[in-house]
Amino acid sequence: MAGRRIPKSRTAYGEELRERREAAGLTQEKLSERAVMSRTHIAHIEAGRRKPAPDDARRLDQVLDTGGVFERFLPALDTRTLAEHFEQVADFEQQATVIREYGATLVPGLLQTEAYARAVFRAYYPPKSAEECDGLLVTRLERSEILADPVSPVFWVVLDEAVVRRPVGGPGVMAAQLRHITELGERERIRLHVLPFSAGAHSLLESGLMLMWFDDAPPIAYVEGLHSGTVHDDPTVVLDSQAAYYRVLGDARSHEESLGLLRAVAEGYEHERQQ
Image (cartoon, rainbow, N blue to C red; front, side, top):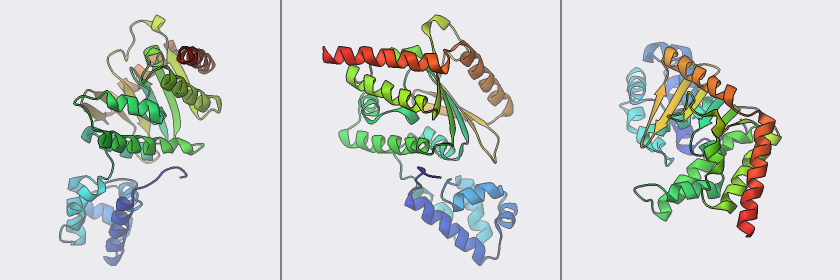
């Protein structure tokens, strides 16, 4: 789809898999049966949209008798600067048809402006060099390109009021960040809800949460902490996570009320910057 860029290394990897598969006289369905993988997963790998797990790569090598080509070249696919625990989530973002996220303390990465993201990276500990921050910034902005598609993925976001009130990067950066989110909400590219301080304790008080749905796979839930993150695909855990999200959504402001709040707070930041 428009706006979803695939690294050249993954495209080349996928083309190599397709050529080897066809040379062996196998359809995607036949290869999936022999390699114990889903046909859709193989299709995503061939299209460059998904990276195989090491075990998958080994089975592909065995079935296609490649001498270890696909396992050996897995590291070459890691072209993005991402925390190890987030690599799989970044892949899932590219496949998701629906994303619903709760931002507990920060604007979610898919919505961050360049200046806001840079301020976040500069606050990392241990500190990052300017070059490392640049690499992280490129990756984060590339991730946000999925919102260039006017339809998919459907994106809902609940922001804790703390996210709106915390002046990350200073008043000028925050004003621009809130204007960016407001613009996306005004043209209905995203659905925005702000959870007010007055809501008090709530079901997602202890963590952020990202929920994703797919056309060809079960939904997942992703929970992240300091230097860690966990993808949950157990149906019970995912359902409980979805229920927790909807409970928070029920306490949040409406889309229009949330947009109005962001406009007002952005004006306050702009006034503060001018002073």
